[in-house]
Length: 60
Image 1 (cartoon, helix red, strand yellow):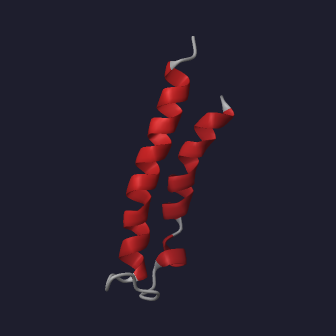
Image 2 (cartoon, helix red, strand yellow):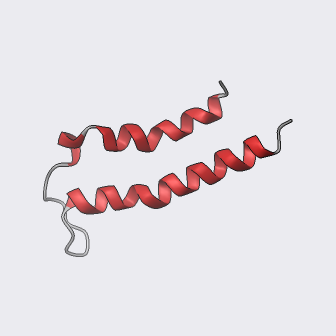
């Protein structure tokens, strides 16, 4: 297993433990922390998948 694949664990671990982000404050643009924390992982996960794909695709 390549160490690069471990990058894909970041969103999994970040969203796995719900009590960490199950709160209302701080708010961002009127959204409670619970929602914007989860929505923040959408572009992060997309970028990490893209990064791993580009690196793995070029290897034989």
